[in-house]
Length: 214
Image 1 (cartoon, rainbow, N blue to C red):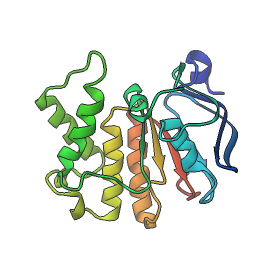
Image 2: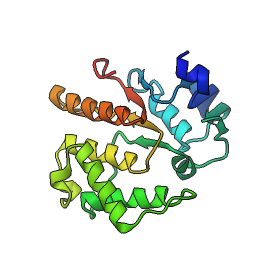
Image 3: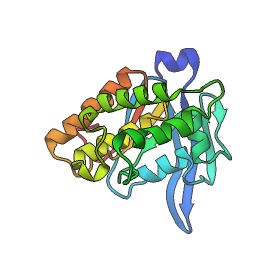
Image 4: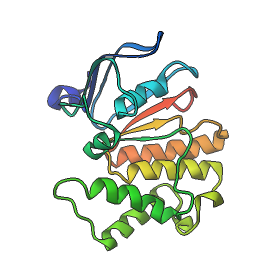
């Protein structure tokens, strides 16, 4: 247990989590504790349940057993967008941008939907644009702000997916196989992005089957 966990309690605490699909046991008695500011790697082969775990934690799937606490608050009964507004975000293995919107507007949508919905938060149009530009700068896509997703390379699509998740201003980010199918040099680019995000205060959980990345 880290000093951060001892002093303030974990940011995420999972106890006894289980998930079944009919007679198939996907997850059983999973315990996980993550302190704020940590970088954590969850590694395993395809089909081992990594994405199922993330889906349960983020509210896309509902676990049958166990408990999930986020900053001490039970997440039971909260659906995905409610958990996102609390500060829990994820990127998807297969990027899901708005294909008819440019990169700035792809970030504007989650930023407005999530951040402005939080009590005491109200961003002006100027603030929103500035924040979107900052996010694109953070993932090295600032020069493509007006381009459409179809104009991006595979690694750039992964960067956009991470930026869209970070646009919700999360405290905890699950990066679900953000490096799958990338070349070694592209993997290094994504690792650099994730390290920068962590240095900015975002807790990172990296779900991967690439040992070198973890």
